Image 1 (cartoon, rainbow, N blue to C red):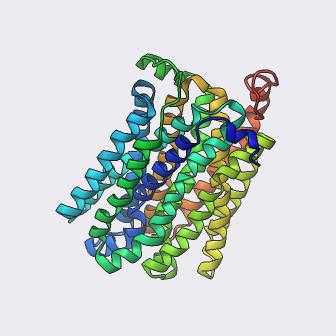
Image 2: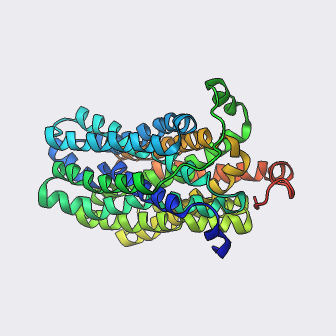
Length: 404
C-alpha cells in the first residue's frame, strides 16, 4: 500500500522520531490502566474510583492537546514536544521519589500523565507538515501508530509492579522516555515554511465551521473507543473474568496491539478507497463488536476476540480520520489536530469513566459498552449525511489530489 515515491517525499528521520516520541508518551499516558488493579487493591478503591482513576489521564491529555495545538503553531512542534516530555519525566520521577498514597494523589498523577497524552497534537503536525496531500494518510498513520505504546504498558507494567512495586514502575518508566527525548532532540526537525501563526480569535473561528465539529465527533468515537478500552480492559478482565493482573494485562495488550498496529493501514486504505468509505465500514464493525461484547461472553477468550475485532476497526478508523483532516484544514492543521485530538481524549474519558460507573451502579459493564456502540452507529449516520457535500466541495477532483 506504500509506493516508492512515498520514501522520496518528506523527512524520514522526523517521521521516525515523531513515532518513537509518541510511542513512549502513550506508554505512560495509559499506565494507570494496567497498574489499576494493584493500585486499587492497595488504596481500596471502589469500581467508580477505578473508572475515574484511568479516565483522568485521558481527560487531562484531551484538554492539553488544545494547548499543544496552539503552541505548535506559535513555537513549532519540536520545541512544544520537548517541553512536554521534560514535564512528564519530572512528574514520574517525583511520584516515584515521594510516593502516591491517596485517591487524590493518584488523580494528580493522572493529570501529569495527561501531558504525555497531549503529545498527539505535537507528533502529528510534526510529521504532517513534511508530506504532500496524497501521502497524508500513510504519513500520519505511521506517526500515529505511536499509540502502540499502550501495548508496552499492558504487557510489562503489571509484571514489573508485582516484582518491584507499582510505585517503582513509575520511576522505571522515565528511562525509555528519556531515551525517546534524546532521539527526538537529535533527529526531529520542524518542516520549512510552516503556516503563519494565528491570533486566538482566528483559532476560535475554526469552531464556526461545521466540518470541524464533524471531525471532532468522528475522532471522539474512534480514538475515544481505542484509548478508553486500552485504559479499562485490564480492570475489566480482572473484574468480570477473575484473571490475574498479569494475565489481564496480556489480554489487554493483545487487543491494544491489534488496534495500534493497523492505524497506518487505516490511513493507507483511506488513501486508496477514500476516507468516508473506509470510516463507514470501520464504524459498523466497531459498533457490532462492542454491542456483542456487552452481553458478557461465557469465556474470557470470546470477549477478547470481540474486543480485538472492535479495536482493529477503531484503530483503522483513527488513521482514516486523519487522512481527511489535513485535506480540509491544511493551513489550520496545528489547531485542528489539537481540537480533534482533544475530543478523542474526551471520548476515551467518557468510555473509561462510564464503564466504571456502569459496573458500580448496575453490577455490569453492559450499559457503558452499549452506549458507545450506539455512538458508532450515529457516526455512520453522520457520514451518510455529509458525504455528498464533502465530495463535491473540498474533496472534488481538481481541488484535492487525494480520495475522500
